[in-house]
Image 1: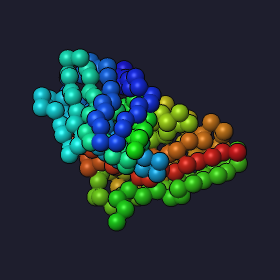
Image 2: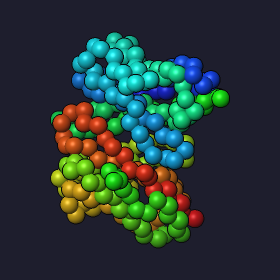
Image 3: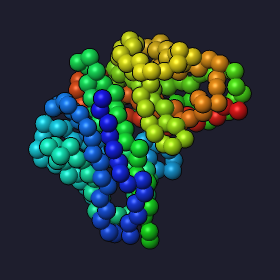
Length: 117
Length: 114
Protein backbone atom coordinates (compact mmCIF):
# COMPACT_ATOMS: atom_id res chain seq x y z
CA UNK A 1 0.00 0.00 0.00
CA UNK A 2 1.13 3.50 -0.75
CA UNK A 3 2.01 5.77 2.15
CA UNK A 4 2.97 9.41 2.44
CA UNK A 5 5.10 10.65 5.32
CA UNK A 6 5.58 14.24 6.41
CA UNK A 7 8.12 14.10 9.20
CA UNK A 8 7.76 17.71 10.33
CA UNK A 9 4.51 18.30 12.22
CA UNK A 10 5.34 21.99 12.59
CA UNK A 11 7.71 24.44 10.98
CA UNK A 12 8.38 28.10 11.42
CA UNK A 13 9.94 30.66 9.07
CA UNK A 14 10.71 34.35 9.22
CA UNK A 15 8.92 36.54 6.73
CA UNK A 16 10.92 36.90 3.48
CA UNK A 17 13.02 33.84 4.31
CA UNK A 18 12.98 30.43 2.61
CA UNK A 19 11.61 27.25 4.11
CA UNK A 20 11.56 23.64 2.91
CA UNK A 21 8.87 21.15 3.87
CA UNK A 22 9.72 17.47 3.60
CA UNK A 23 7.69 14.64 2.16
CA UNK A 24 8.55 11.04 1.43
CA UNK A 25 6.33 8.37 -0.02
CA UNK A 26 6.36 4.68 -0.59
CA UNK A 27 5.06 2.99 -3.71
CA UNK A 28 5.92 0.20 -6.10
CA UNK A 29 4.36 2.04 -9.03
CA UNK A 30 6.44 3.91 -11.58
CA UNK A 31 3.71 6.20 -12.87
CA UNK A 32 2.05 8.53 -10.41
CA UNK A 33 1.53 12.17 -9.49
CA UNK A 34 2.46 14.19 -6.46
CA UNK A 35 0.81 17.28 -5.07
CA UNK A 36 1.19 19.85 -2.37
CA UNK A 37 -2.03 21.30 -1.01
CA UNK A 38 -2.32 24.22 1.38
CA UNK A 39 -5.05 24.50 4.02
CA UNK A 40 -5.20 27.93 5.68
CA UNK A 41 -7.36 28.57 8.75
CA UNK A 42 -10.30 29.11 6.41
CA UNK A 43 -10.20 25.32 5.92
CA UNK A 44 -10.22 25.55 2.12
CA UNK A 45 -7.89 23.05 0.42
CA UNK A 46 -5.85 24.91 -2.17
CA UNK A 47 -3.58 23.29 -4.73
CA UNK A 48 -0.07 24.70 -4.48
CA UNK A 49 1.87 22.62 -6.98
CA UNK A 50 1.86 19.27 -8.76
CA UNK A 51 4.54 17.01 -10.19
CA UNK A 52 4.30 14.19 -12.71
CA UNK A 53 6.58 11.30 -11.80
CA UNK A 54 7.63 10.81 -15.42
CA UNK A 55 9.01 14.35 -15.58
CA UNK A 56 12.55 14.82 -14.36
CA UNK A 57 12.22 18.59 -14.24
CA UNK A 58 11.09 19.95 -10.90
CA UNK A 59 7.81 21.85 -10.95
CA UNK A 60 7.74 25.54 -10.00
CA UNK A 61 4.88 27.95 -9.36
CA UNK A 62 6.08 31.47 -8.60
CA UNK A 63 7.61 31.32 -5.10
CA UNK A 64 6.88 27.61 -4.73
CA UNK A 65 9.11 24.89 -6.09
CA UNK A 66 9.66 21.23 -5.46
CA UNK A 67 12.67 18.99 -5.22
CA UNK A 68 11.50 15.69 -6.66
CA UNK A 69 13.88 12.79 -6.15
CA UNK A 70 12.18 9.77 -7.67
CA UNK A 71 14.78 7.20 -6.68
CA UNK A 72 14.73 8.41 -3.09
CA UNK A 73 10.91 8.78 -3.19
CA UNK A 74 11.21 12.28 -1.88
CA UNK A 75 9.10 15.31 -2.77
CA UNK A 76 9.96 18.44 -0.77
CA UNK A 77 8.35 21.85 -1.13
CA UNK A 78 10.42 25.02 -1.04
CA UNK A 79 8.75 28.31 -0.31
CA UNK A 80 10.87 31.34 -1.15
CA UNK A 81 10.34 34.87 0.13
CA UNK A 82 7.81 33.61 2.68
CA UNK A 83 4.78 35.79 3.26
CA UNK A 84 2.36 36.01 6.17
CA UNK A 85 -0.33 34.56 3.92
CA UNK A 86 1.71 31.37 3.52
CA UNK A 87 0.88 30.38 7.09
CA UNK A 88 -1.20 27.21 6.80
CA UNK A 89 -1.21 23.43 7.02
CA UNK A 90 0.60 21.94 4.04
CA UNK A 91 -0.31 18.48 2.85
CA UNK A 92 1.73 16.33 0.55
CA UNK A 93 -0.40 13.97 -1.53
CA UNK A 94 0.21 11.03 -3.81
CA UNK A 95 -2.16 10.10 -6.60
CA UNK A 96 -2.37 6.46 -7.38
CA UNK A 97 -4.39 4.61 -9.96
CA UNK A 98 -7.20 2.34 -8.97
CA UNK A 99 -8.38 -0.22 -11.44
CA UNK A 100 -6.69 1.62 -14.29
CA UNK A 101 -8.73 4.76 -13.75
CA UNK A 102 -8.57 7.91 -11.70
CA UNK A 103 -7.54 6.98 -8.23
CA UNK A 104 -7.63 8.40 -4.79
CA UNK A 105 -5.33 11.01 -3.30
CA UNK A 106 -3.28 9.64 -0.42
CA UNK A 107 -2.36 12.41 1.99
CA UNK A 108 0.42 12.85 4.50
CA UNK A 109 -0.46 14.04 7.99
CA UNK A 110 0.45 17.61 7.20
CA UNK A 111 2.97 20.21 8.31
CA UNK A 112 1.78 23.32 10.08
CA UNK A 113 3.76 26.30 8.83
CA UNK A 114 3.96 29.48 10.87
CA UNK A 115 5.35 32.70 9.39
CA UNK A 116 6.85 35.24 11.77
CA UNK A 117 6.76 38.92 10.89
CA UNK B 1 -18.22 31.94 -9.03
CA UNK B 2 -17.68 29.09 -6.62
CA UNK B 3 -16.22 26.07 -8.39
CA UNK B 4 -17.02 23.37 -5.84
CA UNK B 5 -19.62 24.25 -3.23
CA UNK B 6 -20.90 22.34 -0.21
CA UNK B 7 -23.90 22.87 2.00
CA UNK B 8 -24.07 23.24 4.87
CA UNK B 9 -20.67 24.51 6.02
CA UNK B 10 -21.45 23.60 9.61
CA UNK B 11 -23.70 20.85 10.87
CA UNK B 12 -24.36 20.09 14.53
CA UNK B 13 -26.62 17.16 15.33
CA UNK B 14 -27.43 14.51 17.89
CA UNK B 15 -26.29 10.91 17.87
CA UNK B 16 -28.65 8.63 15.99
CA UNK B 17 -29.89 11.28 13.59
CA UNK B 18 -29.71 11.07 9.80
CA UNK B 19 -28.16 13.95 7.89
CA UNK B 20 -27.09 14.87 4.37
CA UNK B 21 -24.34 17.03 2.95
CA UNK B 22 -24.71 18.39 -0.55
CA UNK B 23 -21.98 19.05 -3.06
CA UNK B 24 -22.15 20.77 -6.41
CA UNK B 25 -19.45 21.61 -8.94
CA UNK B 26 -19.79 24.00 -11.86
CA UNK B 27 -16.51 23.06 -13.51
CA UNK B 28 -17.99 20.56 -15.93
CA UNK B 29 -15.96 17.79 -14.32
CA UNK B 30 -16.91 14.13 -14.68
CA UNK B 31 -15.45 12.82 -11.42
CA UNK B 32 -16.37 13.74 -7.85
CA UNK B 33 -15.08 12.64 -4.47
CA UNK B 34 -15.78 12.67 -0.77
CA UNK B 35 -12.93 12.92 1.73
CA UNK B 36 -13.02 12.87 5.52
CA UNK B 37 -10.61 14.95 7.62
CA UNK B 38 -10.45 13.78 11.23
CA UNK B 39 -9.61 15.77 14.34
CA UNK B 40 -5.91 15.26 13.72
CA UNK B 41 -6.25 16.81 10.26
CA UNK B 42 -5.73 13.49 8.49
CA UNK B 43 -7.50 13.37 5.12
CA UNK B 44 -8.77 10.12 3.67
CA UNK B 45 -10.80 9.25 0.59
CA UNK B 46 -14.26 7.85 1.18
CA UNK B 47 -15.89 7.64 -2.25
CA UNK B 48 -15.43 8.68 -5.82
CA UNK B 49 -17.92 8.82 -8.64
CA UNK B 50 -17.42 9.15 -12.35
CA UNK B 51 -20.39 10.19 -14.45
CA UNK B 52 -22.73 9.17 -11.63
CA UNK B 53 -21.13 5.74 -11.21
CA UNK B 54 -19.26 4.63 -8.10
CA UNK B 55 -15.55 4.12 -8.78
CA UNK B 56 -13.97 3.93 -5.32
CA UNK B 57 -15.58 2.88 -2.10
CA UNK B 58 -12.99 2.70 0.61
CA UNK B 59 -13.65 0.99 3.90
CA UNK B 60 -16.50 3.16 5.03
CA UNK B 61 -19.42 2.04 7.20
CA UNK B 62 -22.52 1.41 5.16
CA UNK B 63 -24.25 4.11 7.19
CA UNK B 64 -22.59 6.43 4.68
CA UNK B 65 -24.30 6.44 1.31
CA UNK B 66 -23.27 8.71 -1.54
CA UNK B 67 -25.80 9.69 -4.14
CA UNK B 68 -25.10 11.31 -7.49
CA UNK B 69 -28.26 12.58 -9.21
CA UNK B 70 -26.15 13.96 -12.05
CA UNK B 71 -22.48 14.43 -12.70
CA UNK B 72 -22.46 17.93 -11.21
CA UNK B 73 -23.76 16.76 -7.84
CA UNK B 74 -22.54 14.25 -5.28
CA UNK B 75 -24.41 14.18 -1.99
CA UNK B 76 -23.44 12.31 1.14
CA UNK B 77 -26.11 10.85 3.34
CA UNK B 78 -25.24 9.56 6.78
CA UNK B 79 -27.59 7.38 8.80
CA UNK B 80 -27.55 6.81 12.56
CA UNK B 81 -24.82 9.32 13.24
CA UNK B 82 -22.17 8.37 15.80
CA UNK B 83 -19.75 10.48 17.83
CA UNK B 84 -16.86 9.21 15.70
CA UNK B 85 -18.44 10.68 12.60
CA UNK B 86 -17.52 14.15 13.82
CA UNK B 87 -15.06 15.48 11.24
CA UNK B 88 -14.71 17.82 8.33
CA UNK B 89 -16.03 16.36 5.10
CA UNK B 90 -14.63 17.62 1.82
CA UNK B 91 -16.10 17.24 -1.59
CA UNK B 92 -13.75 17.45 -4.58
CA UNK B 93 -13.95 17.13 -8.33
CA UNK B 94 -11.59 16.47 -11.21
CA UNK B 95 -11.99 16.62 -14.98
CA UNK B 96 -12.25 12.89 -15.52
CA UNK B 97 -10.52 9.58 -15.35
CA UNK B 98 -7.29 10.64 -17.05
CA UNK B 99 -4.40 9.87 -14.82
CA UNK B 100 -3.15 12.74 -12.78
CA UNK B 101 -6.13 15.06 -13.11
CA UNK B 102 -5.94 17.67 -10.38
CA UNK B 103 -8.69 17.50 -7.79
CA UNK B 104 -10.37 20.72 -6.73
CA UNK B 105 -11.83 20.86 -3.27
CA UNK B 106 -14.92 22.43 -1.80
CA UNK B 107 -14.80 24.49 1.39
CA UNK B 108 -15.60 21.54 3.64
CA UNK B 109 -18.48 20.77 6.00
CA UNK B 110 -17.70 20.56 9.68
CA UNK B 111 -19.94 17.90 11.19
CA UNK B 112 -20.27 17.76 14.96
CA UNK B 113 -22.17 14.89 16.51
CA UNK B 114 -23.22 15.44 20.12
